[in-house]
Amino acid sequence: MKNYKIAVLAGDGIGPEITAEAIKVLKVIEERNDVKFELLPALFGACAYFATGDAFPQATIDICDQADAILKGPIGLSHEESKKIPVEKQPERGALLPMRRRYNTYANFRPVSLPKSLAHFSPLKPEVIGEGIDLIMVRELVGGLYFGNKERGVNEQGQRYVRETLEYDEEQIRRIMHEAFKLAQKRRKLLHNIHKSNVLMSSVLWNEVMEEVAKDYPDVQVVNYLVDAAATALCLKPTQFDVMVMENMFGDILSDQGGGILGSLGLMPSACIGPDKAYYEPSHGSAPDIAGKNIANPYSMIGSVAMMLENSFDMADEAKNVWAAMQGVFGDGYSTADLSKPGSGVTMISTQEFGDKVVEKLRAMPRV
Ligand SMILES: NC(=O)c1ccc[n+]([C@@H]2O[C@H](COP(=O)([O-])OP(=O)(O)OC[C@H]3O[C@@H](n4cnc5c(N)ncnc54)[C@H](O)[C@@H]3O)[C@@H](O)[C@H]2O)c1
Ligand SMILES: CC(C)[C@H](C(=O)O)[C@@H](O)C(=O)O
Ligand SMILES: [Mg+2]
Image (cartoon, rainbow, N blue to C red; front, side, top):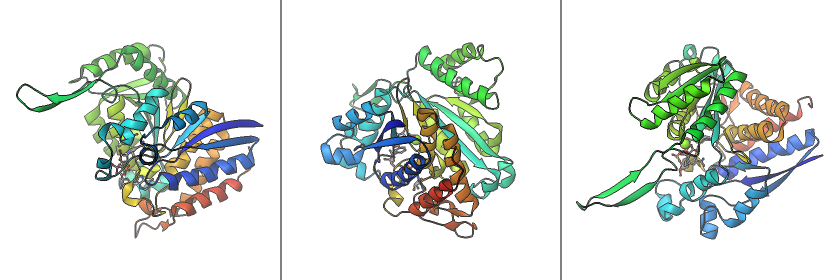
């Protein structure tokens, strides 16, 4: 029997609610396979800060270090609540970025996917959705503005100023490009390179390296897109995209737009892959506005489990079953509050009911 350790960081806000549903799914995967998941819960985020004074405490670091994979719920507080924590200790700077840095999870895969049959979830017209949206954003996750030098002070004129730098070296760009080209080879052999080389020198280097790497993948067609135009194109004709590659900040913004064109951030899972460790998290945040109400959509978290099964545990067939189970629940006309507005024809179910229905579907599937 295979035995895997999974660090489970439920996080803040809706994190514990959607993590509970993801764990139900992991339990069913155990029932159906010769595999044991040892779940190692740990505090991470604002909950960890309030309990220990540190958003990424040493005890959690130790658990993550020894885990085969990390399942992470969203972290963070509302704008007002976050003022209760000193800026440098806030969950984003005090936990999430240190985790990305520690495990060097440079490759962030954010699928944006909606079959034609669920076009009614999207704010876009059915004719824009066409045969369905099925693209994946490959976001560089440990460079750029997020990790460049930062400085804040008062200048000679007595004005407060801030300086943050957008830094990349060519190896950082090359390795994410290889990830994107390899993924494109497995899919439609089409790569959209998102950049802003008309202004940013970082994008000039980005594009130079992209062109060098492209020589290794002559079967992949590259389409270059300025990031601002790409934002429009995502709304007007999302089906033109298959794999999109971009630097850290562009990926943060465009991936949330990805959730927008699907109809909810609750449909946005992700995988963050480093050389020796990967962690899996929804692309969205802790949704303080709906926390504790049992109405959050757990698709993003259960989808992150599916990505974990495929990438960390070599269980691609079970991953497919998890996706199919969730699509099956939608196909039966059910969803959580975010995607079941009055008049939509979709029956509203709770976070827990969604998880239960996914479990039911999975149990009914032939074992692989
Ligand atoms: N990776 C992470 O842990 C992560 C990612 C993004 C934001 N954050 C943090 O989350 C906190 C809240 O940020 P925000 O409000 O700007 O963004 P958010 O992503 O938490 O929420 C934006 C909107 O999307 C909705 N939403 C998000 N996930 C949903 C789900 N699963 N089901 C249904 N609706 C969902 C929310 O209710 C809200 O209306 C901030 O502290 C932010 O820093 C953390
Ligand atoms: C919480 C924040 C630091 C994070 C980011 O900006 O990367 C989030 O928005 C995300 O998309 O994972
Ligand atoms: Mg984001």
